[in-house]
Length: 281
Image (cartoon, rainbow, N blue to C red; front, top):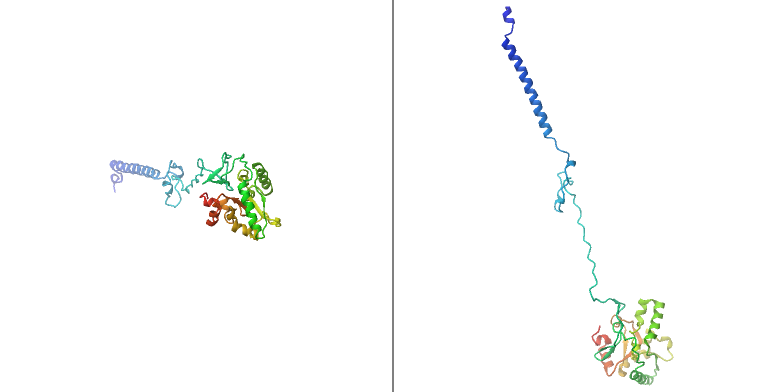
């Protein structure tokens, strides 16, 4: 081989250098391109995503694919139960306490229903109603006592007319002893006692004072005689057994009320209280 063959052509050298440079340039471009793509595909951390404002209850049920609430959704909460509205007292609605109308204004006139004077927990007498013992009622009791004595029973009217003032002191004494709730079962508040009308009598038997003002009196011969015969003389057992919710008072085997004419017999035969007979229950 001669010396001319060992030497490379200038063109070949230039071409070789150009290829190397081209490869380097292409490699650099490829590397930058891949780097840019890698940076573009990275996710922003989920914690940096803003919460959705003003989400509705429907939106709060949405969950991510992992089964936990996504940070861009308000977590589901149990609905808040609205409080039950408090029932307000109706205007002019009355409140009943132990049978009485709470806050009731003092009576200015007595109450009559079908001509019958009514005195109970809802219908009081005026404080100045002071007619004393009714003479017709007293005469009827005396006649009844004579009829009972003919059968060996000596009746005693141990309590009749009571004034408003006396009933006040009596009621207050019972309240101090047993409390207002219990006293209201067996003692009338001032103005609400039939004794103030002069038409009511507490009746017992002479010689059996231990049974006065007791339910046991109703089981005696005298008590049974009164239940079966008092109406013939114009009287009714005012507070019978089992009628407390209607009359407002406990059973009082000794308390009898006088009624004019044959009204007592009509009430007795009907087997009802005076309130029921007059349609006031």
